[in-house]
Amino acid sequence: MKKFLSILLAMAMLCALAACGSSTTESKTATAPEATAAPEASAAQESSASGKTYVVGICQLVQHKALDAATQGFKDALTDKLGDKVTFDEQNAAGDSATCATICNQFVSENVDLILANATPALQAAAAATADIPIIGTSITDYAMALNIDNWNGTTGANISGTSDLAPLDQQAAMLHELFPNAKNVGILYCSAEANSLYQANIVRKDLEGMGYTVTDYTFVDSNDVSAVSQSAASACDVIYVPTDNTAASCAEVINNVCLTAGVPIIAGEEGICSACGVATLSINYYDIGYAAGQMAYNVLVNGADISTMQIQFAPKVTKEYNPSICQKLGITVPSDYVAIGS
Image (cartoon, rainbow, N blue to C red; front, side, top):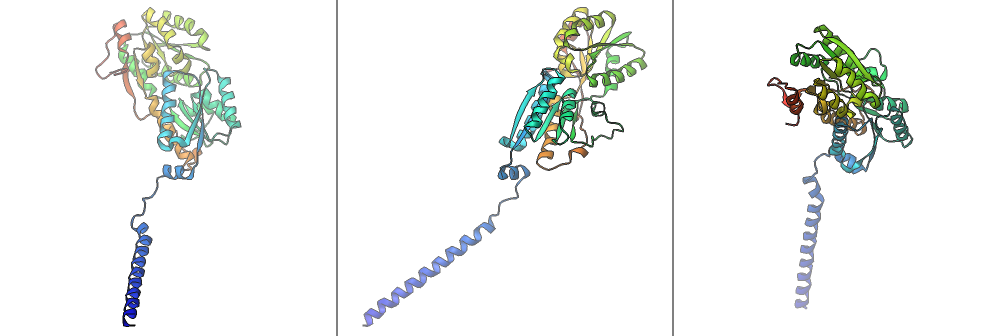
């Protein structure tokens, strides 16, 4: 009997020890998450975790180096922030304003989350298509002129904001004077259908006339008469200024064939035109303004920023650049503070 009671007592003690061990394990499991709490998620991580995705429509006026760079910068900025949570419906209007309108109306019917309007005619088409879907512009010289806004204060007050490609026009005029102080007749070559080009021409003309130059505008309506108008300008001028004009950019090789043959130098409004037909430019970086536009789009889409009060942004810097090949062919030496395009 005593032996039986001893066995029962031993078994009771083993059960008690097992129960204590189980209680300790449960306690540790319950407290572990508190000791290893995850850091606070970023806005992009929250967007990813929520499963929210975005469709952005891109309307680009025409394919050329500057606008292509701006579009790429925009896409890179949003992709850096959102990864595969953003998709792009990228459309090119091949230089036709009516096609811009068709593209933007399509975006509205598809109810995209945001529209990128790359160049002034694209912006005007998007603005006409919707007052509700947010529109970010880029490569726009002057938003007030493009949108017919009086009493401009840097914001549109509507569903539109973005970045500008406006370089300091007075400094571009000063560059022409620095390189060609003895020139007499200056031609301004641009497309009369582009409001942004007219805006630049009016300002640069005034600055150049103040320096003593005789200034004449040479305008083409579209790409069909670029060659003929360029020939007229080259035959009458000592130097030509070409602003940031989309038609001129897409026809820069045609302009170069005329003006280089005639020995007439060109000061260009941006790097892409200068690399094809110019001797020098005071240029912005179009990729940079596209990237900034993408960051603005992210703030609207993810952070809920009020686009109507977002200030238009400008390129953070400008650079004096020259085209070594054309300068060599024309026998032009630039000052040491100019940087070779592509270097």
